[in-house]
Image (cartoon, rainbow, N blue to C red):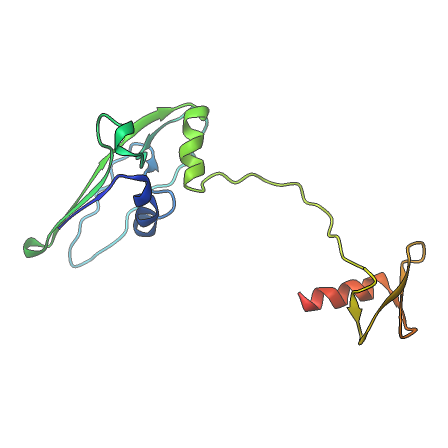
Length: 161
């Protein structure tokens, strides 16, 4: 059995097998013996902007002279699995970012905005709808005549979400 994971459409499958950061890493040797006592071996390290990383590009064939990717070869009669990884060395933030972004490895923090709650005349509350909103007193008058504070309306909306 021979499986080649080299093209852009193979990235999703490779991520399901090896994890979302498949094909990104630094050079390290990890002995992982397969046998009766199957175990896992892992090493973790934060990648900085000045690092050189190894990347399996998952690019179309016409963009590479040397085919890079992951090749899985399994011989059932011997229960022998060989994983061959052919990678490209990448240095510098500009060259690393596209590979990190394509795998969802970049998380940009967004500014936290204040919640905005819809208090319109067609918003239903307690079997009625809004008749009047008093912004100075932070109150809402319903068509049924009931007077509510903004916080009561927001709590009601929150419980329906």
